[in-house]
Length: 489
View 1 (cartoon, helix red, strand yellow):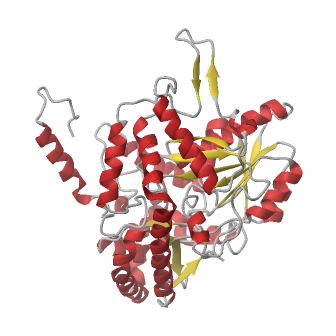
View 2 (tube, helix red, strand yellow; view 1 turned 180 degrees about the vertical axis):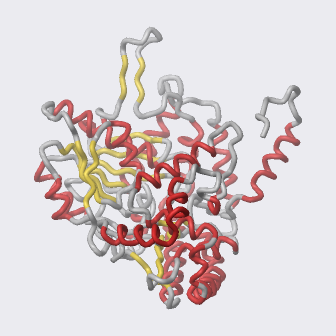
View 3 (cartoon, helix red, strand yellow; view 1 turned 90 degrees about the horizontal axis):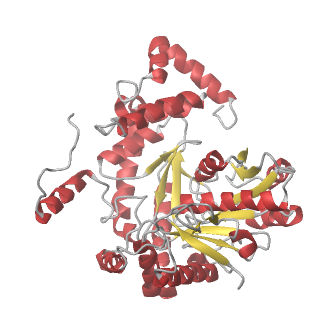
C-alpha cells in the first residue's frame, strides 16, 4: 500500500468534510442506542451546545494560566464543583486532566513523590491494589517505577480487605480501590479500606473515573450504595471522568485531593531550562482549552437537576436490562447492582460468551468483551432506553442459538477471544497482541482482522503452537488454565 502524502494542492473544505463523513460509515452506532461503551450521548441538542462551548476556546492553551486566565478560572470551578459533588472538605484541590488514565497516573505520581519527601528510606515503592483495579494503574507502575501488588478479590468481585491489609509493607506508598470497578461494576469496600489507610498513614486513592459523575445522583434518587467518597476519612484523592457520565466532550477528567499537601506532589517544575522556568500541573505541556471550556459549560447547563434526570433514565434502563437478562436461561449477571452498567456471562461453561457476542455484533450491537471470567460489559446511558427491548430480544435469540450450536465457539472472533483467554502464559498473549499493534501502527496502518489472528496480523506464535500440537495443545492449555489462580476448575 503506497504511503499517504500531503496533497500537492489543497482541496476544498466541502470535499474534505465529505470524505471525513464517509469514513464514519463503519463506526459504532451510538446515536441509536446500539453501543454500550465508549460514548456517553445525550442527544444532538447537547452535542451541538458542547461543540459551541468547545470551539469558543478552540485555540486557547492552558499551558500558561497567566496568559489565559479564563481557562484557569473554568478549571478551578470545575474542580470545586466536582469536589462538592463528592463531599470533599473545603480544603480540597485538584486539576483537570485529559482523561481517566492521566488522572490515575497523576495520583500514583503524586503518591510516589510525596513518599520521596516524607519517607526517604523507601527505595522500591509499591502500591497495593485489587486485581480488578483499572489497567491504568499498571501503566502508572510501568511509567513511574512503582511496583504494583495485586490482591485477589472475593467471590463478590470486591476487594478483599484483609488480603489488602496483609499485602501492605514498609515500602507501600499508596493503596487504591474502585467506585465502581469497570469489569463487574462493583464498588470496593471503601470504608473498610479507608480505616486501614488512616491507621497506616498511607494515601488512599479511589478510582471514580467510571462512576464519579453518576453515583452522587443515584444516591439522591434513593439507590442504595456503600460510602465511597470523601465522607470516608481515609480517602485522600478521587478521580472522576467528565467525558463519561459528566457528559462533557473528550478528553476531560478531574483528580481531586483532600488538600494541597497531596496535590503539590503532582506538579512538575524545572528551573534550569534555557527557555525559562517551566511548571505544569499535570502530564501535558500544551493543554487544549476546548475540553476545559466544554466541561465547565456542561456542568453549568445541566446542573444537578439535569444530571439527576439523566441518571434516573439510565437507572430505569439498567433495571429493565437486568430483569430481561435474568430471564434468559443461558445467561447470568455478575457483580452487585451499584451502577448504571451491567456485566453478563454464560450460566454454564459449555455456552460461549464470545460466540454470543459475535452474533450480537453481526446484528449491530457494540459492547466490551472481557476475560476473568469471560463476560460482556454494557455501560448504560439514558439514550439506550429505546433500544432495550430490541437488544433483549436479539440477546435471547443469540444465546439460545449458541447453546444449540456449540461449534460457534471455534469460529470468528469467538475463537480468537476464547483462545487468548485460555492461554496461561500471558507473555505469549502480550507478544501476539504486540505484533498486531505493530501492524496497526506500521506505515500502511492496516486495520487487523481479529478472526485471522496468527494468519498474518501477528507472527502467529500462539496459533502455531496450537496448530502444531492440535487438540493436545488445547488440552494442555485447559489444564494449565484450571491450575492458575482464578482459572476454571
